[in-house]
Image 1 (cartoon, rainbow, N blue to C red):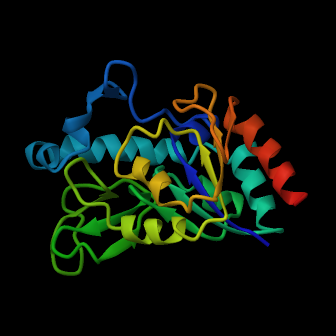
Image 2 (tube, rainbow, N blue to C red; image 1 turned 90 degrees about the vertical axis):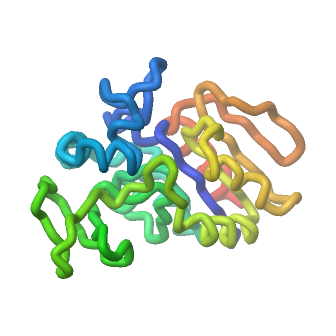
Length: 226
């Protein structure tokens, strides 16, 4: 049984119908990213920010896990698998993966502005006036630009113990998540699955230039035969 760490990005969720984080113009669903994904944007126009995430949350209820998500669940039958995801959706959990770390927060959770340790499950719309137990406004449980990534240290610790690292559907350009690769042991076998890979093959690095729904089942089949 191998210790397998999987790092997933927007590419795996895109195949379920979730739009990627930003388009070629640097916009997210037609919005300047700093308007809807930064503390400055929240302070300037919280109604806009809440409406933006309410729409994302509503869309999430209409999509389902795809073959890439499901293949990773099959991998758990043979190996110890931990998923570190940059995505804020719950598709890995709905597919059946048992160990998922969300680096950038979770769309189906909210947290208190008074105490960030107060985190609540939240499946429906969030409004101005939705307060925590301390009468403080609730906000999306999303890591915005300029905020610390609270799960990063845990992700680093897990990556440092990886026998195999699988990177799926991410450009490896967004930090600090992109820096995780450097924490994998030198001998770790790395699989990079993306239709437009941004890195070159080298020793212990295998590139599969395919979408997640095609490439992930291919890698899982290889690893289940170890």
